[in-house]
Length: 281
Image: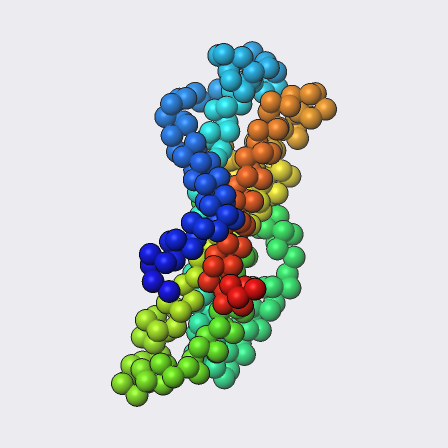
């Protein structure tokens, strides 16, 4: 499938257009917003529990912080968490799955046994236990913890795809030409999985953002900076829903749902465009 045709088919897919449009809109808001609205999201000098007004478009929270400033800073930080965790999980998953498939034998059995062990662990509980060991948790640390617990399912799929692809004629031709397995993996097999890797990355980013929100909600997320998850922590500790501070919890909820849903739509649309079985359906 040539590049112009790929672009045209993606643009013809309503799920892709909707998903990527929403995601880019949120990304632009998160990137440009703090520059246009340079208010410290942790400044508590404003009147507390103020409804939306010209001075504070999304009002203030229970302790006098500007809600719009929180939201703008939280969007970019949460996307950073998702991207960093997604890269870590993607790198580990692809590496483990590829090595297991290409080396086979004891290496394959050992790596898959380890992968299955990690896969069976309750990820959220593991994240809670690890995060509880650190009194100070940076955004990068939380992203790393999420990333190193999110890769097993990807490793299993990559292994399966590599085992299937390595039996193709072009792989045997590369072997006859004297190419090593590392070269074949990097230049022959991985390019054939590019679409699936892109789909997986979108899912990993969405999952990481939701996981950060989940552990932050119970107070074990980042202790530095502002993320959407940390805003949820402030919301629940200050009983924002009960107090009727809708301008605090509603925009944050809408944004995090929009991010996750848009990435899921992008992943689904990529599968629809590139999966021959779905394309024929």
